[in-house]
Image (cartoon, rainbow, N blue to C red; front, side, top):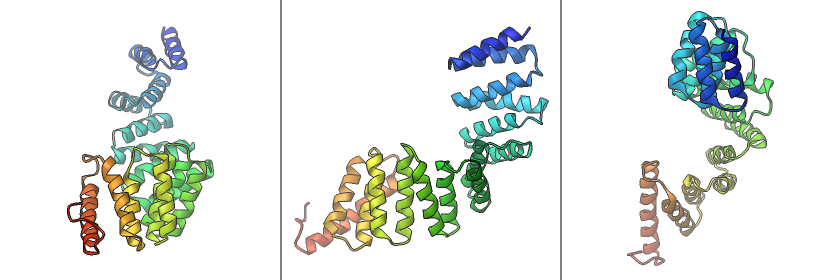
Length: 272
């Protein structure tokens, strides 16, 4: 009798004892290999606990037994994203939608699969559908903005990121400000770009990349070399040499050029 086993799975799910819940639902499908409801519970639990290596084969088995259940495809697609297998995840989310899955989560993640494969034009209507279902979905506005950027429609990109900012919560607020900095920089609206990069750094000070961007914008807008140098120095003090070696090399080269110019102007000692 699997009823008691599934009750234990349900109780542990409610108290967020995820691994214990997985144990009991796994027992249930061992007893009844056609218990699709227990398979769907397992899928949800594997997604919640990000156990994609364990969850993918179990959901594949479940789909082999019931290929008409959209939840199984949604959960397997979610695990596929966690495993960075965006091509497979795209197929699963598309299938879930074809089978009637119509929640914002599914459309948003289907759009993400397309975005990660640089299928920006295809992703736009998917994100637009997401926003019909949930107009306050900050992530959907954010990725839609970058889709428009890659379609070279920067005005639409900025409009989408402004909407994203309305609904964003920390820590994604910093990402949105970074995106707005990029878009305004492309339009050579340097003051707006600087404002957004400054706000990005305020929200996420363990990420110093906006400081490097502020240095570049200062140079591009004809600002004082000393000010650009200040931003560059602040960036180098906090930069992770493993994470951003290319940017670090670029900033070091800019620092050398600025120092040479300042020295020639008599504003810097040669050994500074």
